[in-house]
Image (cartoon, rainbow, N blue to C red; front, side, top):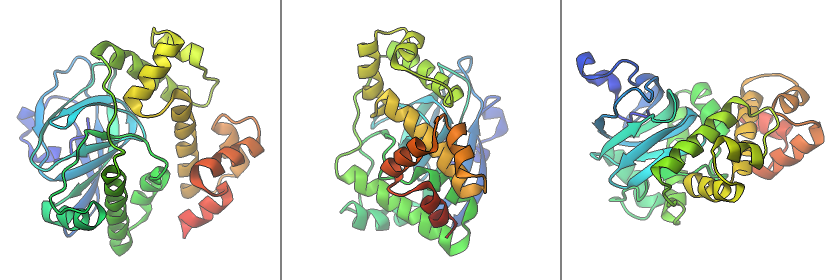
Length: 289
């Protein structure tokens, strides 16, 4: 559950066991970044909370249901939860246990200043509950960069992330279709299977069996819920994990490619360039700079 206010500010007695725990990574004037880990599951009853600040939360692992006044969404790795300041919300884990998010908090005045330029209005409010995984957002660098940057570099990074998200949303890229409760549960089963087996062989027939749907209904429902196809999600997950390793480590690119489920380096290089606009080697050098 991606609590965008600080769970530590609540009295311990009011929070269920396994409730989100936020570890602050960095903070500055009007912003802060937290690593939020939740271990709630289907046995835990969802409870209402409130966004004390404007928040973005990049889902790094797991999936969960999110409901706010802007709509409902099934959050998954690579997607952003969108939280308006002062809005009440409910998260739930009917389909599995736990999740992990990188949460970016903005003080209302600071967010208004960014929104005035990036979205054309200082009174901008998120129109949707979720921003689907989007190739315009450098997600692996968001994940790796929040741990590598400090001081002014981190503040510039957070502001740039806010600008990019706002620019995408202001262009009309935030809305998605809402699946039924039963379909959300089934799609979530498929998401978790993909997460656990992303390096193995995955196909539409196998995933649709896990979701207990026909291939066509699964494909249509998956795309409506997540904003991208199962293949795009699998590729995005593999590439995101590979890109994090490129930024954070010194392993040979060939080893990262094979671990990501690619049988040959040329295919990995081609797919990587399609998604990130540069070769894996160039991406590693740019990340380190």
